[in-house]
Structures are given as structure tokens and as C-alpha cells.
Length: 74
Image 1 (cartoon, rainbow, N blue to C red):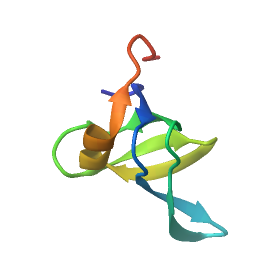
Image 2 (spheres, helix red, strand yellow):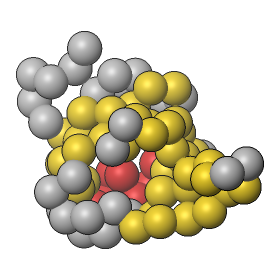
Image 3 (cartoon, one colour):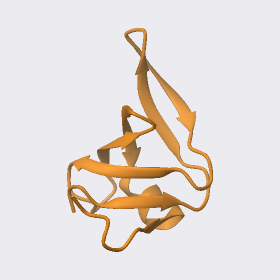
Image 4 (cartoon, rainbow, N blue to C red):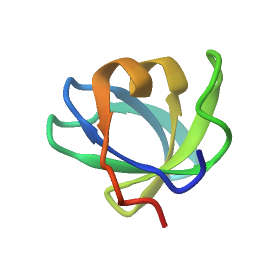
């Protein structure tokens, strides 16, 4: 599942590093994320690229609140 792209349908929590500290932000509806590390299974967190940042997101939230962009895997 690495490098698959998803379009956000409902806001999802993204954990990002800001000035050396981790903080949570919400994605916006319509944002796209690309899975860059980790399988999209179970309830784990995966690394994604979101708005030119590396973030962590829960796989369950991506599966439930985002849609796969077909043909967009790199």
C-alpha cells in the first residue's frame, strides 16, 4: 500500500512535528495524502506526505474518511 494517494472526505487528525514538538492538526476536506511508510492495515499509524510535510495518521481514519485516488500510486 506504500505510495497510494487518498483524498480526504472528512477531517482526519494528522500528527506533525513543529519546532521539535509533535502536535496534532486536522486535515481539510479535499486534501490529498500519500502513504509513504507502513501498511494500511490494522489500527496502526502510517507515515504520509501531507501539504509538503511528513505526518502520522491512523490507518483506520484513512480507510474510513478518505477515498483512494485510482491510478495515482507512484
